[in-house]
Image (tube, rainbow, N blue to C red):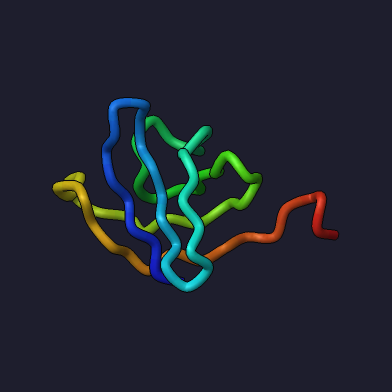
Length: 72
């Protein structure tokens, strides 16, 4: 799923165009955003791609949405 990541005054924000969803990134698996999962304010969790060096923001990436415990 395409996800756009951008830096705002409040922190990192994710926009999912296909769902017209705009949410703040509230938790990450790793210190940086890349190469682990990222949780959005609405509870959605995405597996984020890994980069050798953090890319410049804003950037659109292909991220996989992971199932959460609430959805099981």
